[in-house]
Structures are given as structure tokens and as C-alpha cells.
Length: 317
Image (cartoon, rainbow, N blue to C red; front, top):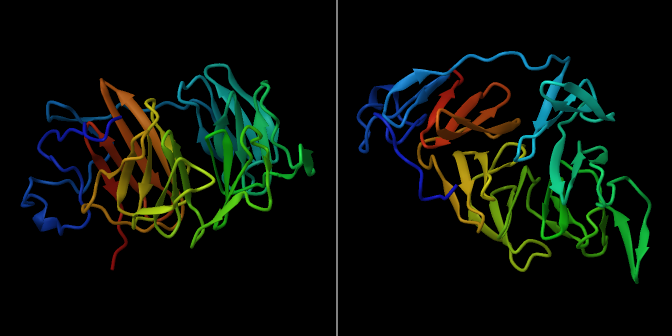
């Protein structure tokens, strides 16, 4: 997705707005805005239609942490404290027990393998030559004394290095040894706990007390604050062209592969960043959209790309 191609469609050219009072929704300077567009699509012709229904694909007891590679050939998810693979219509198969019982699982592709962590333990999946990610002992590689990469709340992979966020610390591996780190220098400390990592070709976005950009990845030559926005805990979504997207404190943001950052709902959306969020890429009827949702009392869903749609549930004063 290129950041200059977002279209303004239909009678609501700027999408949703939860800042304006209700009586001003149709008097905005640049056209009417939406407060709520729940389970509907706005087509490129400007019409509004109800979304199709849904059918149960797989039942479970406590399902969460759903993730799939970009090609969508399978999905990984947690259910009742274990990690499973889902291959429709075959069903689910056990990948690893003991993951996601009390905390969400984060994933990243490392070469042809998938590394995952729930903040308490680590694991990897895939029959490849990529080293397994285990809570292993220290290893000597050449003249380096390397330690195993720790479990964390966020993970990503960039520039042949694994990145793991542990609180406010970002730990990065040695190049081409994603399971091992140099404990003396393989880290960067941020001013607040890290809630999101988004790796694109040009570098890495880190969201903590604000949004930071590390051009070229780690070790960091510079750490540049590029936005005051924070974000709920979440796994960044990625696009087929190498870009990324996530839900920030002021709406959905999108990043190009080169690292250009754009808030697609700037000035229109404000929300609490407590709790967790998730994004979903959706393609239907020739339209490509991103849907984002927050868990907890502040429940938000927003779509951007060819149009914007959203539902906001606000607390009463």
C-alpha cells in the first residue's frame, strides 16, 4: 500500500470522527463525517451496504492470539494454554503446549521459521535450517560469549536480527543468529514500556511513550521520535508490499516499506490506549481495507485504505 493512494469515497470523505459533537457531524468543513458505521461497507460508488454474515470455522474454549503469514496458507492461535495450527478445512493440530495461558502470544517470521513468545517462554515452528528458539544456555561463537534471546512482550525480525521487547528494553540478536545475543551491547533502552514493534525494509518503528523510528534497524545509529502517538499492546500488521499498520492513540497509522509514517485519521480520532488491540487485513468485493479493534471497555473498529469505517463505544460522563 502506498501512502498517497488513500481514496475518499461516498458521502463521508473524511471517514469517522469521535471528536466533533453529534450535532456537527454534517457541518464539518471538508464534508460530513461518520460517528458509527457498524458492520457495513462503503463502496467506491458511495453506496452503503450491509456486510455479509459469518460462519463458525472452529470452536474452542479460550481462543486468542490469532496470526497468519501474508500468504494466508495457515493460521496459528492459542486455545486453553496451548498453541495450535489451523488449516481449513482440515482443522487444528498442536504446535506447542504451555503457551498463552495468561498472556498473549506474539509471532514473527525468521527466514522460513516462525518464532513466538508469550512473555514467559519462547518457541519456534517450522522444519528449516533456521536455529530453534529455546531458552538455551550460553554459547561461545568465535570469540563472543553469547546468551539466549529472552522471552518478551513484542517481537520482530529485521536485518537478520531478532528483536524482542522486554518492558522498556529492546533486545536484539547477533546477525544471522536470531536465537543468540551479546549481553554487553545488544540492547536499546526506551523511556517507557514498549507496546509495539513494526519492522519494514527501511528500519523499525518502536512505540513506547511516543513513536520512534530507527532507520536501518539495530544497532541504532539514531533513534528519532516521529510522532507523539502511543499505542495499545498489539502485534503490528503487515501488507504484501512490505508496509505495516497498527492502531495508535489517534487512529490507524500506516507505514511504507521505506519508513514513511502517516496517520490516516489524524485530528479525527482520540482513544484510550489501555488494554490491547488487533488489526486485520480484509479484501472483499474488490476493496482492500484494514480493520482495527480494541479489547475492553473502549471497543473500536476502524477501516482504512479505500474507505474508512468505524464503531466507537464511549463511556458516559
